[in-house]
Image (cartoon, rainbow, N blue to C red; front, side, top):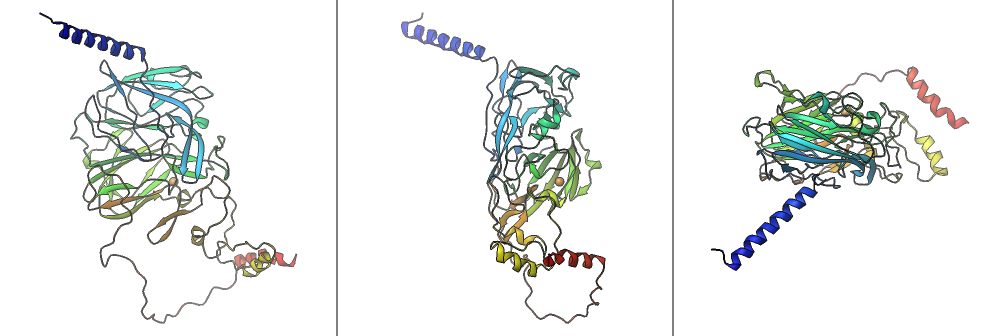
Length: 455
Ligand SMILES: [Cu+2]
């Protein structure tokens, strides 16, 4: 027997159900979520599908999905974006869903994923799923494995994820331009078994590079090798967030390289082991201890370590990659005494500064006028003064009291008593030094340069 009240409740439920179905039916494409912030967005636990331990994309985010009939559906939108490279500089890039790099796609071994790609660029594109085992027709090479995705068009890619690993996605259409403009992202395949390859913190980023003239905002897309901004996830130090961990935690960092040169990534503090490549996971018996791992072009390296308390620098070991946009053709001035010249120039140009005659560290402290929208060559301040770094540099910050899931910058490290380098102020022993070398051809060249005062 149904009374009036239960009848209406049932009818209401049916009505709501029908509305929900028709709304879902109308939304044939999953929503394209947009994120324009360059702050690291610690991802929430997966709301549905197979469980996994999400990664933290440095200065980035993970793309939400929709489950539809057991298929995990994502929606990427290739489009022009504005990316803050570091405070004080914004770049006009191309990316996905509001950001460059695009959002990290995370799924699980065994998942069937369907990725809709909408092209809002002014030219054709495609997406290649770098290192993922899939049918040839899903590989995304324009002309070879698919027609180009036309302007305003949407393509569908669909495949089953066969093996866990760390991968990237990027266009295989007008690559030199589209990658020089910042089109790339991470694709992480988590293991089905939650305990396999388990770590406490899992970070990921892509090495990228731009050629942006100081004072402008759009990369030169015809640059082959001579880039001037060396970035991690399209951020330059001090715009790169720290890697925060708690003492004793097992930490993984995954690094992919989509620049046009190799980057030896060096971490201070604990030794690490390279545990994964784009080809999969390295068996335990084949891992070796390291402090630097070279990441070649188109490669991915995952390495792991046990976190040790401290502030540990992590950077590319090519020292010109830890600097921001610098003028080329700056002469080496070390050892050149240009005080006389400086006095004469200062009489004409009151703000003239002598630079580089004792090395370049002083430049980190100088407040020189810069063109709009550019970064200092070396910048960033630590508890003891200027850090003198830019570009591909960050800090692994490990503390005893960081809560699980907390990625906030804990501030500078408090060094335990007796563990901090300090100035010696005692007596100096007398030392006998060898005589200074005689003037040679180089010295003569320096004199020749300063000889312009006679002009
Ligand atoms: Cu480098």
